[in-house]
Length: 496
Image (cartoon, rainbow, N blue to C red; front, top):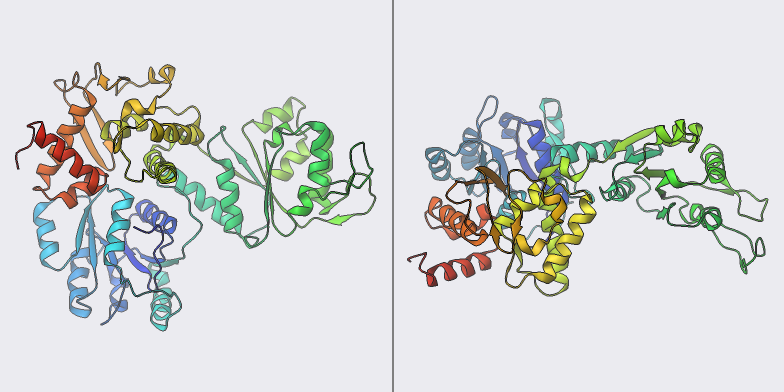
């Protein structure tokens, strides 16, 4: 499936839960899918007309008209319109009723974001290649007229991985400040994704077409940092054999990201403060002023307020930078992002070596979700990259992750694995792509492959042998499922 879907008609999303609506919206934006959102089914009815080409995704339980009511109206007004029903209730009778009424698909909450993307890709008209057709404009215009009753247009935006509500709130905050030239201070632990935040602000700002220049203040010797930031003239110091523009000049009309700002030497802090105040710089060895039309985003893993109290950071500079603070939570405190990020890195590194069929096993997913991630997203990326190289078959197992043993001791609901063995495990629930795997005491001493096999066969039974649905629930590829089932059959665990 393509990462992006070219389309002339926005997907219509109807969901009254604000957090879930925003979570789905982020997923759609990540895949560059244009969409309109509504809180009530009644506001969608005026948009329904013969020949409407889009996908309607609606919650079943809504204030006023239900999703099922909306489906029935849609079937009358535009019978060819694909409608997907979402619900938090695993009610077989409801599912059957929805499918009989014409629903193309039925999603049980919580579901994996990729499931929704695949469904939209499956039903979206392939001939839609432009977002500027009269039909699309009419849909957007009609939607904007109902804005006062809860609908809004949300354009596709720069790709980000944000599924957890905490992350969604952070990126929403980014979007609010992006429209301005306000200085931003991004805080958070090392590896949490501070530069991702900075780059996203740039890409969604009016400076997006300008340069984005990043510099790590802690990685450059103090003697060179001033020259790199502000530039120098030929002969201004030993070794300056030619004039050189600094990062401020390079970032003119764009964004300058100053990472690890807390490590900047005191003399440069004073010079930076003057630039922020005057919007002008001077190269080393020159008295000429150069305009610096630059938006500053700074980041640090230090507590700058404590640094100010200790006399290590200028208070006036701190207030200049901290006009709009954004804190990036640690990965362990936004657990719903873990698996989507892991899958993103898995795709990136497996494709690079021609192993794009690789998937994460059930046990690997569970362990990733329970691990405390002291190194945050950067550690997750490194672990997935290594696991891609270590995996022998089509799946990455828990032992391929080679997680830090000292950190595994903190995991209380899932025992640390030895090579393919969980020695002991209390009763627990391990979330896996929106499903829950219940481990009984009898299963506690079984090896990882046995736990995985039982879960796969259980899911297959629950969907009445429908492999397509099983793949969606398990979050693995169809090829991986075929491989597993063939192995189970040969081992005598499956009779078909």
